[in-house]
Amino acid sequence: MIKRGYYEEFGGAYIPEILVSTFDELEVEFRKAKKDPGFWQEYSDVMSNYSCRPTPLTFAENLTRYFDGSKIYVKREDLNHTGAHKANNVMGQGLLVKRMGKKRVIAETGAGQHGVATATMAAKFGFECTIYMGEVDVRRQRPNVFWMERLGAEVIPVTEGSRILKDAINEAFRDWVTNMDNTHYVLGTACGPHPFPEMVSYFQSIIGKEARKQVLEIEGKLPSRVYACVGGGSNALGIFSGFIDDDVELVGVEAGGKGLDTGMHASRLSSDDASIGVAQGYKTYFLQDDDGQMKETHSVAAGLDYVGVSPILANLNESGRVRFESATDSEVVEALSLSIKKEGLIPALESAHAFVQAFKEAPKLSIDDIIIINQSGRGDKDIFTVADAFEDPKWKEFIIEKAEEYHA
View 1 (cartoon, one colour):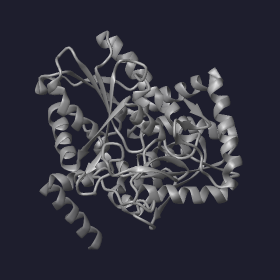
View 2: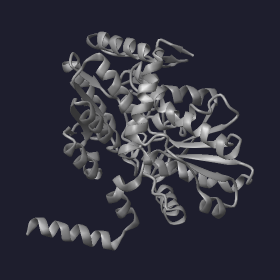
View 3: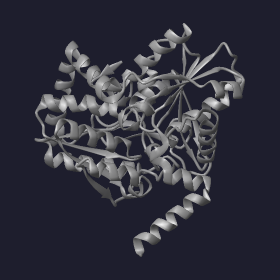
């Protein structure tokens, strides 16, 4: 399937010549690590004793009863250290950085979870750390910015372009070009130039390996469907990987934003608004105009408003192996509220996109069917956005009081 980083027509490494040797070094080290049985064991040990793996597969009994359809299970990546699936990837890349002998890591972040995870990894392994984050995301994810800085990372707001995730990626690449001798770019999702899509998917595959084993132990059979939200695609590929060779339907849910007919969304594979192009070092579907200029995107979830999508998922979409849907902002808030009230689960806004589609389809299935939703992160990072969406008057009063205290 893969030929020098290609997944049929998607992928590749469209990089400046100055970065070729750096990418070659990374690929060589990654190949050596994959062939070394001790490396995966070291990785598994770190994730076990530092990051709470394996994460549980939780039976959502109340939601199952409420929808009166399939059995609903939730893979609890929100219980991973730093609150999301992001730790899986950054800890794996951190071990590679140690092997390469580099002392500094940089990263981009949208929702902030990858930034927190990278800053945490840097603190644990003793690396200098710089995080690039769009100015818009800095504002709406202030709690995560606070923790990144407490962990010792320098957080640099990106003020160019749309000031969101794609712009943070651009700035991170600019940094890497000038500091590649001592710096590794910890790309957060399964996008970008080869070998990043393959490498990130490899580390995230721990989700799918666990989920498949857990559901067989609990139910004695495989699920009918598996749902995951899709920004760049790392959490989706992580859980899908465990079932890719099975007769299990895989469903990726993108950001429908204000609606696909409004243009204010980030649906690349579930809409007709995207086209194939090359940007940020790889070939995939992008939301772009006829001149190849990237369009502005929108999502209530900061981690899903990326303009492109993993080349691996683009290929799986073309082959029909993964079905892609979208969820609007309003549907996401409604699903989040329901999961909180009915099950006591507080998914991140990103993860709540997967809940939306699962909730739509669960009632149409029978109790003999099993579905798994990947709860890729927890919602405490979204407190400001969620409180605004719920129009909570007590929260507004709290913010006003705090503002008055600071200005007193």
